[in-house]
Amino acid sequence: METLPMTTAKSSERRGRSKQIHTSKPSVVLAFFSCLAWLYVAGRLWQDAENRTLLSNFLKKSMEQRPKVLTVEDKLMLLGCKDLERRIVEAEMDLTLAKSQGYLKNQLLQSGSSSGKKLLAVIGVYTGFGSHLNRNVYRGSWMPKGDALKKLEERGVVIRFVIGRSANRGDSLDRKIDAENRETKDFLILEGHEEAQEELPKKAKFFFSTAVQIWDAEFYVKVDDNIDLDLEGLIGLLDRSRGQESAYIGCMKSGDVVTEEGRQWYEPEWWKFGDGKSYFRHAAGSIFVLSRNLAQYININSASLKTYAHDDTSVGSWMMGVRATYKDDNRFCCSSINRDKVCSMF
Image 1: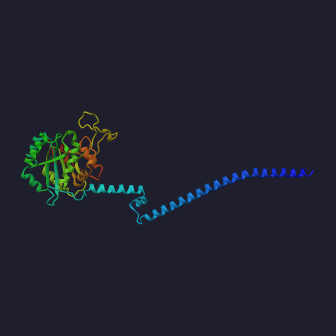
Image 2: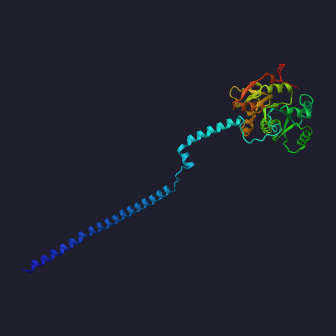
């Protein structure tokens, strides 16, 4: 009877130990995961701290290397792109205006300017390869030749026949012109221009650009080869017009644009002249005058100036883009009945 309590006591002790063993396993697992979480958090904190240190060092080094004086790039950023663009556009407009008024530095001036005296006029008479007889008629009528031509230049007036080069450079056409020029010395040969009917509108650009680079004159006159010119009357008219800036002088006209292909004076780009299909005001092509600053404007902007089918309307379109002073003088209307006119049709 005394052994029963002892047995019961031992059995209770074993159950207690087993219960302790079973309850301790979840605690161990929880502790393990807690350690992992702590290690992860500590690692991230350490990594963030290292990144902040690297970033701080980089910013410090950048600040030390930053110049104390603002660079051009910094100033441009402060001004802003829009403001900078506006300033550039205004500067370009001012520069274009200054150039159009003849303000150019280091310009080389040749014949007629070596004495320092400004010429009154350079007269360019358009001619072609097949116009040899017309040239001889001119030389025997209103246009001086030989010593008389030189004396006219001493008075401040230069006259030249204006012609380009053949499409086949150096052929018999070019050689004949060169030979004639060696004898008469009264040509202005436009080396960069191809002498052809379809290239006639571009001839004006080459003539004015070349003439203004060679001679320093008050006026530059374009004359067709089918008119008779009152030279002294023209000289007197131009002499009384000295000092006029931006002068565009001629027999001003306008008219309908010819839209039918095959008709005389057909304009391939007729659609650019609006629904009215009428030309803007321009000087007739037989003879017209430009002051020096307008000729200078053509010289400077020749690469971008648009040409149309005819040289008179082409020049008129260029004059619309500048502050040209239009002078409508009926003395330049060669087909009129005005007795004081300086030209007449052949």
